Image 1 (tube, rainbow over the protein chains, first blue to last red):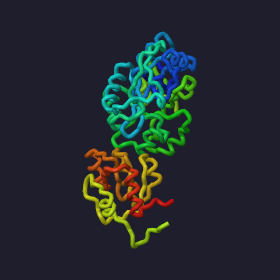
Image 2: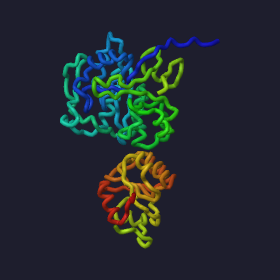
Image 3: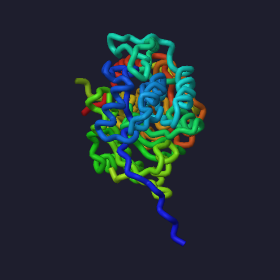
Image 4: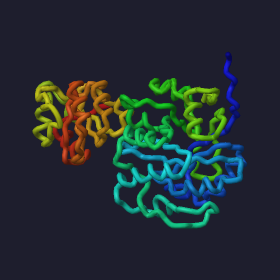
Length: 253
Length: 123
């Protein structure tokens, strides 16, 4: 008997957005403004991914309550080798556990606000709570394999960030996908030519590409996004979509 | 500029002795010829730029270093700055015949000494 097709709907998804906590993000990257801009751009699902910290994820999830936008809690982790990997979770608690793992492995150095910005922790309404005075713009002492394993052990989705870029992209830094690492998909940056990326990196040519904005400014939110067909806007459903299971799927980028 | 001639072929043993490098795993084959030097921490750059027989100077110590060194048929990899390397890397290196050397000095210092030995990466 043919299976009934899942009641999926098309979602516009941008899984890589920074807040004012991230080095070099503009001060207007505040939860309420981010959600408002995402809604204005017609985004259904976004993920907050600051550098090595999840401290503003709960505030962004709260800011999205009652809006058409759903927010996932993420971290843009930096590995020992200087590779950026997104760890995406349904809730701020799991992202917080990943943050604990990273902070135990980050060098004990102070942020220099004149170079990296103030690194502000804020409320859902964008009110100042505190500064994170630790240097976040650096690598944790964990390999990219260890980061991916940790993200998955916490129930998250691990996506190597902006793989088309030489700076901090998995393949730019490490040349090859490390042996034994099985990826579900990769993030490509807004301006990347997907065909060119597939030609340059045949190892990932068959993987799904998720295009995301890596927004550090309000004006960049949604400037790159991916259409994904989901029933619910969760990490579990994103994993199904990346595997093309149960009617969940994503557009060919 | 001084050209390297047959009479001054530089061998790996000389590199190890002159720069005070430690073998991380199996002993480096001292008679292996060294054709030049490449210095980079981006493996994609090394894949594009390094030439067979060169010594690769880096601070990168990921397992993929071994794969790239084998692929490019490099004479040795010098991991600088007093870093230690994981046993999984040494095991893979010995399987692939890749020589891993450890330097206490910075990559700059190591490159300087290799230059003084007469090694180059000529374009």
